[in-house]
Image 1 (cartoon, rainbow, N blue to C red):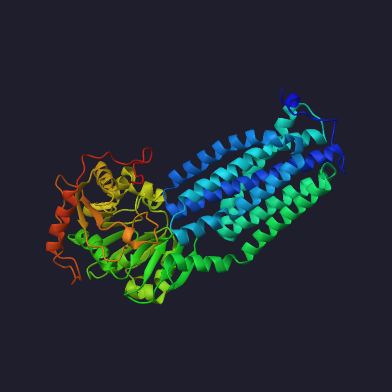
Image 2: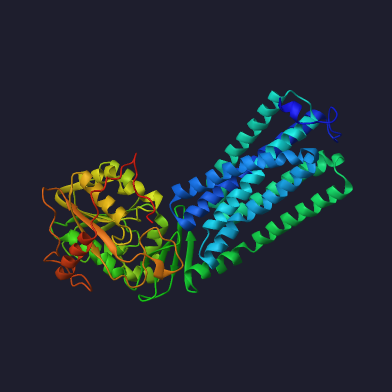
Length: 533
């Protein structure tokens, strides 16, 4: 029996409040500490997904390591039950310091070292051990306050713990992250955690503390709160320094939208870079190679009505609008912050040739999958300029079901082009995209462009070393019909800086040289895009 194992001395602790009030205060502390613990957990998952990518893998690592560590913490807490009050106070102070500073240290390790995976595992392990040690000590404390049967004690503790976890889990995405941001949210959570744990022990259980342990807890908790408060005050300076370490000294715009972090660096056609969630999406030095290869092969045919999925930077639209016989262009972008910058930022709007001023262009803020499900159709050309499928949030936009919706949106004889990731460094991903397009009943023509000049990475890589970025772009051209679509340029194509029919002939051979054996298509219930070795 649990109550037989607790080795309690006496019927109740000498506390300055009535037993029932003391019990409520302990359960309130359980509630607050559980909420803070879940915030730390979600914070680790969020910042790991942001810094490293592949949120499924990062969530699995954090949760599995943390649950394992909680078991270790529960075993270690057995040694502290004889000093439950001071042990709980020190554990909460340590949890507040480690959990509160976790996001800051992870971001710093990525910015200045270039690697955060080891820090992620270390924080998951440490936080899990401390969280696991809480419940055994809290059970000891609550039994000392108000003796009750073990079953009732366990039920009350876990009820408070689970409700606190619910509040913390909801507060993180709906309050802390959008209002305070990742770093400040974690730091303030740590301060609340330290204050709650310290207040419970120093007030309710102060008669169980020796003068030495009382002053130790006061010193430790004040130090932890002071450190976290100082870090909060310096948060903006730290973010600016870390951002310079990641992006360089020419950061002009850094905006956290409801969808992602958007950063612009440089000022001119030769220096402008656009980063989305830390991944280099557009480099003015060579973006024309990518966008010409993406857009113009699909325009070889009817192209009066064009649909662009993604491409909120306006660069794909720029290429489409160079055709005078295009009557309308619909651009579906999930992040209005990107389209706003593309309209208003002088350097980015100059790079996209002020595409948003063209009356033929209509921008829609929507999720591309849901927007297509609403039944839009009749498009001669559909251009899929979306983030790489290696980013988990984009996986559904590279599924066979998604391409089925795109096929329904095509007019008879219409053509689809998809950016499918680099075929040389991520061949399995690229050929899975091609198989998924074919699974929607479309015939395909894969092609790829090599010779990336500046490390422009449309894929999931978030790296400070451009030399490590994957080289080359892969595309899949498709239409309805028994044969693969012809790969060439329209007779009405404008003068291009890079793309020619000869380049396209080589692009087809470039992709086919790396063809893998038949890949299974990716579906909503069986996604097949994972990080390749």
